[in-house]
Image (tube, rainbow, N blue to C red; front, side):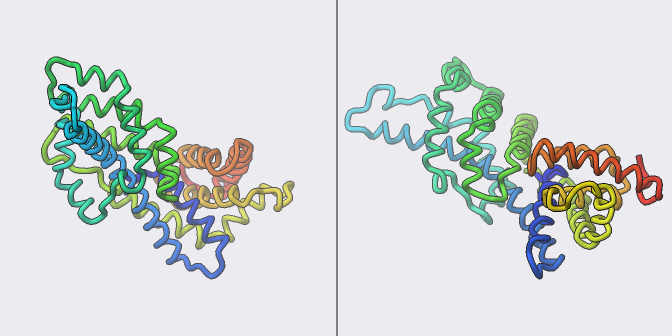
Length: 308
């Protein structure tokens, strides 16, 4: 699911691209934004698919061992609890999930085989996996809890996952942590409902899609005006010394401050200061904080910003 943290990040990136590219229209930039958001949402499905691919890989390993020339007793009759996990079965058969992958098939085994093998090896060594496999009786609750714990503690924080995601798509770079939280929420939904679970939508509601397009459009259409606000409070700075990304972040922030009356000022300021830490530097975040704070005070005096 796309939340406003992701939307703001994507708008900043698309706005930056627009400003440094000659002859790009606002309409083209808006289409680029929508495409970027759509591609980003695919990470949510890819992370869910990862758990299925890991299960299938283990099934393949067990079958290969069973068909050895001289399999051991354990290899002939392996513990199939992990492979037959109820959550994975429910996810695999979910109507929304199946519909998405019928349209946009994806397999970690095809695009990141080494990563998939290494991740499975890591999972098989965890205490969570070993305890799950050795429990005398196992319920659906145990099945869901295994994957919640494995995903939260082993998969999501993995440096190998971060590297694989960065290699697979430029659109996924900043979204892994956010989409991982949505995967955990989805596992919880399966625990509570099991059948007829709805996958999280791309946007929470139509208002978020409108927010994305309005934020970008207002930034690009009013760039000269918003730039004049920035110039007013950076007179003591040589323009060449101000990183252009910092300028873009402030332009988008001003757009939100001026044109989004329902969003509290402090929320906007905090969000873009955090974005500066991602896209620029700690020093940039302090600089942007100071400039935006001065702009807000002045625009409130002028009646251009009318909100807390």
